[in-house]
Image (cartoon, rainbow, N blue to C red; front, side):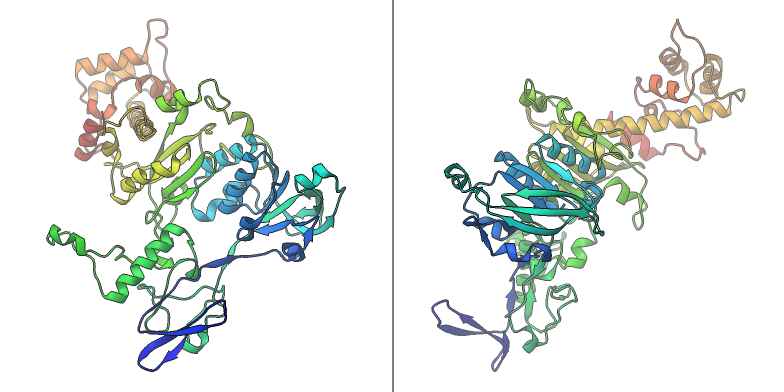
Length: 532
């Protein structure tokens, strides 16, 4: 690129045969992408053949391998590293992952993966026979040509790399590994060299990314950029959106407001919204992310932890739909190694100690909804690990971006037999949590009206319900659910909630008196009527 007379800039295009042409334009879109970052400790082995093959590849050069390795070491704990580890495991290779972080959820936290879903992914990698070395990194590598037998040559095993693995951030040797192939997936860097950006005064950030405005224009007028060259999120989907948005900005097109004539939708720009890295990364609902493992992982919106933290500060609950409880999940896995909650044995081991710290531990493929506790219970996040997750997430994206609530799921009759049933299972699970919360509030109010003990007798419940305005039929229903003929003793809060939750929704019973700090509102009642 360089300044030009009669146009904002010119682009010199060089052909491989040595010829070149010059193009002049007022607008240019830079989409030069990124290249894989290579590890200094392995630098010579990215290009040096060993036993007739290059034994160390990055996530770009891996496409050029010409043999099927039997022992593979994958360095990195990000999306690309995980995908390739699963691919080679599926090809019957012995795979070891070397990860700097303490576990995969921590390694993937920056991209927004739910903690429990992350542990499911980690367990599934173990179930596939992949060895996971956490808090580890490669210090050095040496080549070993090995024995050049005919069978060894046929499988590309006439040379191996011997790797020294150390504790992250130290020189303490943890173990030594051998590999037919080492794949490093430790980040990517924008490709800007050789473009002549200095001649146009285009700003390059310290990390190598091009700086762009909200319209994706660089610091040089008329020069736009999109995709990996401007930094995270560095996804194919967001790169396409950015390119379309940049073209719209070049041509001066604008969005069509909701009040305008629908017949003008054909003139609507494809991507009129701000698609700059800052805008995309600041809103987890802007785009879904899919990880192409086997099975798949996908998510959109907020995790429960992110929703509760600043700047959102939301009070949320979670609802889980388990594949093993869905009709299709049952049909597809009965009698197979993936039947039921098959990941339970693999939830233990290094990096798994906190797998259930945030609540009930998931032990099989699942879809999770993150829902606001307050009515109308808006859905702010969807996270899935299991078959077809990367397809299912687009309904989840519609829910999150559209501000939909639980009733928008429970009102849908999903076609059988499809995994979309998981959304309804997760919604019902969230409703169950909300109902338990309501029963806890009722218990607290009954306890305040009781005799001061930490439990409630049948008489205390009856008197309290009557004071709260419950009719005789409601009182009788609740007493029957709480106290059996064999057990008329007092109930504590857990017994109360467990037994009362077998009834219909407490919100439908209209037990929360007006003026109470936790009282239901008209909106609560309306939502619960729709949900039930």
